[in-house]
Length: 96
Image (tube, rainbow, N blue to C red; front, side, top):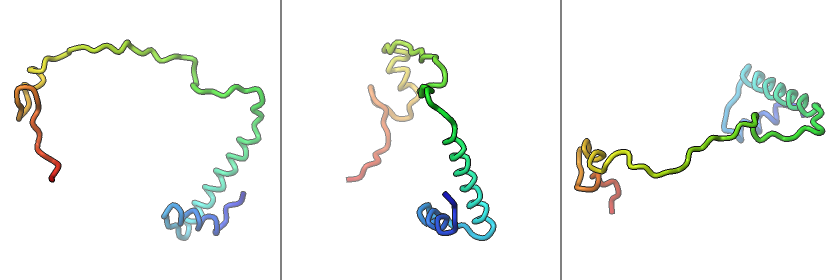
């Protein structure tokens, strides 16, 4: 595929970008280089190569999901600027 002015103008319109002068030529060359690289990758023989989901065979070491009481309700509310016995008080944000 060849990157020409028509294709670049179409891509610019779709992406809502403006390219002018030397910038336009630089973008056109960069896109052509990307397509050339993809073409080069497509030529690599991958027959018999298993697809990779992860780069290594390491597994995630998850810890057991256990509920723990780290601080008490009283400790959690101790520094709150406004509170009731059991809750934080926050300013109203929804108007009716």
